[in-house]
Length: 282
Image (cartoon, rainbow, N blue to C red):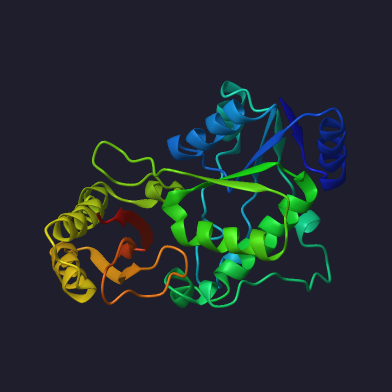
């Protein structure tokens, strides 16, 4: 496993590999790797000749009051996991390499970036799409692996890749959950024992929506109301949003048709958790 921090050096290695006919699978991460990340890495290994992982806590996607400074950075453990999974290349750039002095160029996906999480975190997705653009320019992957837990992010990056003609295929992998149904997230380490127990309600609320739809309830507002009622029973839960949207446009659905994305964001203490469930009817 090679570990590189210089964008030019990893770009040269990737170009050489591609000239030799090697396919490149790429998993972008902010580190604090867990089983969800590992599922992406394993798929990249299965599908491609080389698996590349980036570890970069991207300052451009954090707001002024967000957790950039305290975001978990267990680099030693992350590298040990990458070695165990036989990752070929790990890219760990420094902030100044990605955002040198005088940096003023950003990529923004209009419309999609202002909905759901984007409404509560202005500028967040501009930071995401900018760093993913830079990473794809540096790594020139054939396949980009993303997780369904960050559903809005996956939709936005897919739109960006299509609009800007990136020559990369996107594979979105299923959410990995713990035994209690809680979606795995690097931020779960912030949760106290009681918060972790209460957070199980998120998956229960999504499952409630699925049951209601399966039993013929297609009015989104009624489903959302019942989900909020369930979540609000937990003392430490503070709802940011519960929404039922179109899986591609992320626009709200008043009436559920063939396909919908049920998604939510809820705070437990200072920790904001997101989750979602895509539901197909009929």
